[in-house]
Image (cartoon, rainbow, N blue to C red; front, side, top):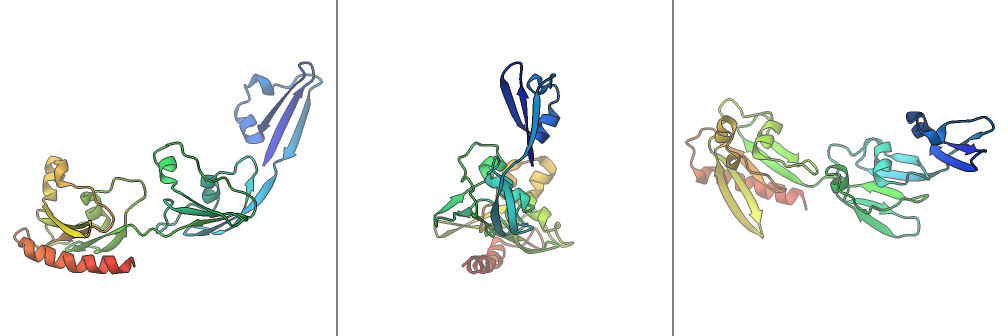
Length: 241
């Protein structure tokens, strides 16, 4: 946390750089020191910011005045936990105002975005990830799983996350139950067509609230698949309330 100033006496100019950046670019002509130049090292001022919520190491951190970015603050706290999300990060300012920021476009996709600037005493709160799906039936680890931030998450990913199918599980007739505008949409997918032939249509993208059901055999009828999936959907819905 040091910045270096090189004052070139013969040219009457000054160059100011963070010390780590100056050391990374020794070939920079503006940083070359000549006889009579003045080199000064100054501590960079910092201010306290509190990071809480679903981060790996919550607590008070000191931010450099030349780096007030929200992403840098969360990185100091170790980043979000597996059940945390950076989609709706809250910044509570000391003046009582609050801002909410979605960091996914910037972090994952590299999209420029105007994010809140942090000030001394601000509180950054990383919320819990509530976007989940269910995968049940004949998989090794059935249950409810979060959908990763900013990633395209597909049916094959869901089966993999559940450690694959159980010995009697079949991928030829996987049921997918989805709520759209309060109504249930049902579909059957043969994931084997994707795994063996690369048929992308057999590997749909999942969204929050989806219920995936892997049946015991590929002969089970659709009614039985969706009866089991519907019960699971109710559990998923009420767990988010």
